[in-house]
Image 1 (tube, rainbow, N blue to C red):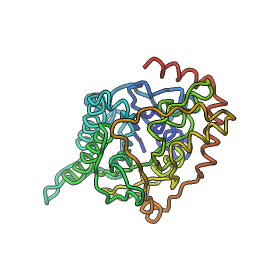
Image 2: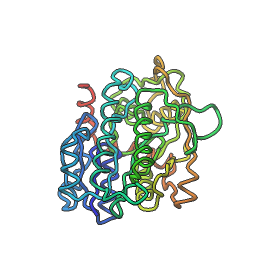
Image 3: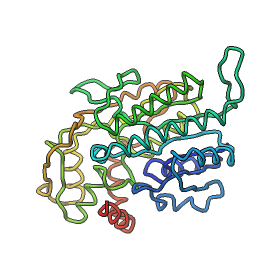
Image 4: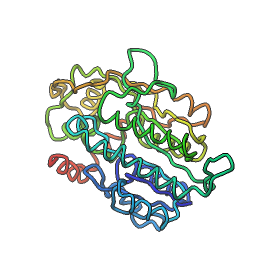
Length: 340
């Protein structure tokens, strides 16, 4: 089985590739434009694997995408490729629309044309056996919750940032290609990821990096924004489960059942590294900052039998330790981050 993973040099995509190569016999093509958050150092362990092949390129390049599908006889596409940072989407929405919306549509169109075989008597398209398109999305497409309740797969799509709006638009396109053309597609929507190799613009690695440098820790608003957190390895195991057992046309929420206020996470990291909470600096809140996200993941648990393996405290300790023990990686990526 041959699989195209887009955005596979990024944080989640690289962890997914390593999981798939370790646990399955797929041949994997990784298409990544290597923008600031894409780092081939994330894949050092598999660069020489005979079942792994890297191609530098943009998912909006229709000619390239079509060439890859035909040249490598791709049967599965897992689309991680996305601009993913809310702050950057506020400053430059166009980039997010180009990659997250038009890029996804390019992949969908290429998959539709390559995988379909003929029209059936009822006018619908039939597709080659065992082909599948998995769209990796986010709980942010649902918008913001109140103090209670959870996002389910039936929750209304109500994005509040340019980033989440672009991801919602991509999800709707995936659903439209399923409904209109019968494209065998599935959507997953995850809560906040954390773990090794995450680019240090995200909350947890940002705080660790700044603490290790003795810098102030910027926390938006009052820091009481609530997020549900999932370790990246749990997220990747869930995608693996959906890829092999999920129903075509369905949406699956993937969460870790770990609701935490941002300020509590920051304080935990500070104390774990034996630093001072006096380094915490509350700064002006992000525009349109959603107050709370929380995932109901009962569908994937009950229907597919998936459950997260990591407790949050266990996963966070391992994550902090990884960054402390990998200063060369951190220094290299931090220089890249500082230049942006």
